[in-house]
Length: 361
Ligand code: UD1
Image 1: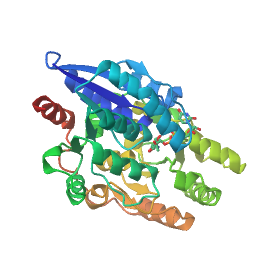
Image 2: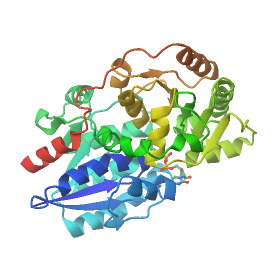
Image 3: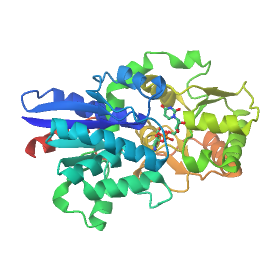
Image 4: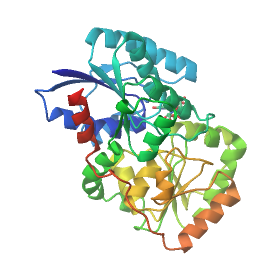
């Protein structure tokens, strides 16, 4: 019997861990599993609602670390996580994605000799000003098993000198969740609630520090959203970091066409993404989900760690400049979307492939 401990902390972690836990639960004679929630995200609609929508078991341990500077948050996660690992002595700790909880827990395990598996390994933006890029580089260097979502991940890891035997191309676990829950999401009739018709609105999300923490950049992006909303209604679920920065700007925004709403749960956001004419975002995961759904996506960043969404999918990089964003959005609204395909192994079965590798371990 292998004892597997999973770590979640922030919103994008939940849809990655859910399918792995579900796949392991199908083999109770082989695997025993535990879930640790660091508490990096703690608001109901940033955390608990995902447990409900994704039908995840309640965490076995909740570390309640909350917010703080990178150093304070990472240190708090490490200090609280270490005794949990020492108490349970798992055979392997599974960390996902690129948030502070990912690198903090991987580092604890590496120092006390507990094996780490990193899911979503190998992605690189090559932009070290992004906190997530630092988290990705470090986590991959100290992990024992590296599960990549796309082949570029393998290439990056090999270039960095990672032992080939550690690398497993398994596909995208977040797409497993999407494939499973899309039918349920569509039953919820969310579009009516927002008073929009399918393919007649734009969905926006923003939370990267580089976009929201600098008032000039944020003001430019909001101005772009206001201009675009004069053509097509815009729905903008606002991340808590972004809400506080918008509040600091102290500017009024037109409420008729630009709907600023609270962050949404998994199912409702998925339904809105699927129904959108266009998505504008700076998230990583949303670039992948729109590619799978075939919905055009503009990414308000100069780079992406998910190049397969550009080469095979529906994604396009626009940067964060107001005119650039408005121009790209208008062009995308005018033109029928070009051809795209679903990247290899984004097929709803990535978690099963991970479980097979864990079993062989
Ligand atoms: C974190 C991740 C980022 C991920 C994002 C998804 C890191 C370095 N960043 O960014 O990679 O894309 O989550 O959402 O790990 N806050 C609340 N309630 C919450 C959580 C946060 O109000 O439940 C507010 C706090 O003011 C906090 C701020 O949001 O200081 C930022 O939270 P934090 O977890 O530090 O980073 P995110 O911007 O959410």
